[in-house]
Image (cartoon, rainbow, N blue to C red):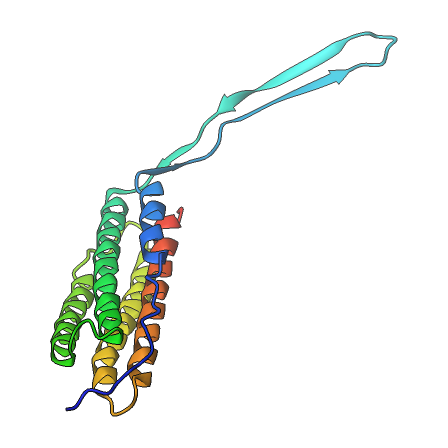
Length: 198
């Protein structure tokens, strides 16, 4: 199929949400602690008595350590987020190179097709992550995240279709935008899971 000229230069900026989620995940990987609580209560009797009663509450610290399966899960989804960020960067670069015609059509098509295969393999690997059983809510968390991952894979395939479309690049441009939005949505879900405090 003949390539269609696309005079618009590449304008895609790699979203930073997926990268930002790494920090969030590690913040909650080991434990969540409640702040130390201390208070004092001083009561002064009427001036005629001149007595003062002071009571001090003992310092209390409550520490909750996340179960091992949740720690391992957070590590796993963080690793998948890092992997996706790398794929996203490569897809955006391939698109940008085609926009600027730094790379030819045939090479761009092969690159995007190969990346589509990698994204689908990434999506399939999410199903292999062991979902925590110590807390039942994680099954729902994982389901939502997996759905977001499915959207990432779908939009990656749409980029290939867009490149082959008989237009001036509009379909591909829209597909790349949808892909980046799907990656952001996936990263948001990972952030939500990592920040969850039982």
